[in-house]
Amino acid sequence: MPIFAERAYGGIVVDVDGNSFIDLGAGIAVLNVGSSAPLVVEAVTEQVQRFTHTCFQVTGFEGYIALAERLNALAPGTDEKRSLFLNSGAEAVENAVKIARSFTGRQAVVVFDHAFHGRTLLTMSLTAKAMPYKSGFGPFAPEIYREPFSYPYRCAGGAPPERCGEACADLAIASMDKQIGGNRIACLLVEPVQGEGGVIIPGEGFLPRLADYCKEHGIVFIADEVQAGMARTGKMFSCEHLGVVPDLLTTAKGLGGGLPIGGVTGRADIMDAIHPGGLGSTFGGNPVSCAAALGALSEIESRGLVSRAQEIGEIFKARLGNLGEQVPAVGDVRVIGAMAALEFVANPLTKEPDPAAASRVLAACHSEGVILLKAGTYDNVVRILPPLVISDDLLIEALSVLEKAVRAL
Ligand code: PLZ
Image (cartoon, rainbow, N blue to C red; front, side, top):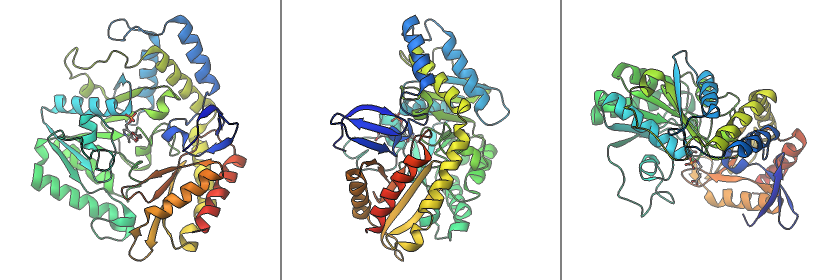
């Protein structure tokens, strides 16, 4: 967008010309606690004044440990946990794969259609979409296998939405068995709710079936919670909606309340299996970012942002839920807490994607002062990711702008 930010607060971005925009993008699901959230600012300010850097593997400090303990306690499952901190989502995913490979002594990594996991060589190789993420940037990392993801609106198995989870799990499992062999797979890496792919919520049974397959074959199940985690979907982690407990989960984005940090949290027996010195980073888990993350977690807890995300989801459903029936160009409306999307099609029967319609809606919203994001393998999805601290009034005002732009199609 042709906007240069001057300041931001409570779901509003003010640009250098003094224009105000309602932010339904949150810096791509980063500002869950809002921009410059008070407890983040306070924690960062205090930390910056004490010390700015040590490199945790050289000189430890309390903030890193405190953050690890908080995440270990929040991660689903009853197993003892460990956490490692890095600088970004991509680095978190890379490290999770390294850990799974080292722990299992296996190499194969299973990922899914429509997945986004980052832009470094390994994570770009794990990401599904060629343009703009991979095109011209090969060769890619080896031993990566892609399986169908349950996308109920466009089921790869040709099943109706309510059967898509089972149908796609069948396809994925048959393909893993035949093309890789379960006992060669180090890890299965999956976004429980896909973000960049277009806010795709898998059908019932899909992830539990895959998790069972992982258990049966000693495969590490990794949930990439970089985008859908940290209260975004109305649970702390999106996998909690879907009936699975991952062995490892990755975090970033919302974790740092606006400062860069990524994390891997998971089963202690897996994390502890890595040789000393095998994992590390100069800046990973920087004290200022750890302080920010502790502040962000306190914001989530003290302001009840997990349940706020559920409320936002109800507002989305009330305002946008009927658009699919009323506007033929809206093929699908998907909502999971404060993560929502409208998928545009040229024809509701053929479901032919209509990226131009999505672009028109975005342009209309931008010119009316609402920041929104595009997504989707077919570039035909408008994604809604407000800060969880946005007021009802602002949210409803922005959704009215969106609704008007959609009806104008
Ligand atoms: N895993 C699930 O969504 C980042 C990408 C922005 P980094 N998504 C936004 C862009 O265009 O590059 C993402 C994600 C999931 C991993 C990542 C990677 O996180 O912090 O951008 O490296």
